[in-house]
Image (tube, rainbow, N blue to C red; front, side, top):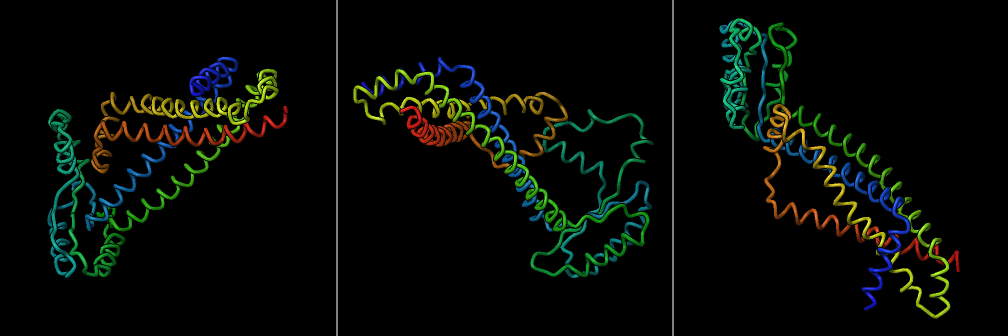
Length: 306
């Protein structure tokens, strides 16, 4: 019976202070959406870094129309290093075609009729697979020197260096995300505190009457705490709706959809059941946190009007 009273009073208090309650709910939703965006970006980049690190590869990119003989001579020199496991000579067009096929896209649909322009934009590439557990510093040093000396070489990409750069990006994203989420969290907590304060002051006469007839403080506070928990839980669901709206272009737009598909290759597949479980768990945790915040703030505010 008491639980029903708590619920009834909770919704009564929400109706009395609807504008502030809605603004608090939206702020909680925005905070959750931004938190999830930063988590998804950081996790995706982290997975890409792990994938690149496992490749143990070096790629050498040449200027378009570089003579094949020059590339073959460099390949013969690279084969002399003991850290080299295998060498593949390819080009940017072939790699692009292979990537598109993996995503289920027919590369011929994207081809143009201007063959001369295509040839002038295709980069010859040497891909070097390194032997695991074999030092390869001498190879990397030699390739870096070759990059400086040979004007035909655009860039030597050493994937371990790329992983180091990715880790720096992850740290920057985590720092920026922590600052942004922390700032929005403070605003959300302050709005919850204001919501509780306005609601309690609007119901001060009713609360004093309940105190006079000996109603325990816990019973008086509980509807306000439940109000905060409800705002937190529903705000979390609103945050996921905001996230879904923001991700709509990645579902609809052709090129953004391709980018999203590439990212998903590095993120373990999650079933719909797991997504729902994660969403509900997050709503429960945020609801519990806002319940504790609301309970503490309500208890403090009640002392002021007593």
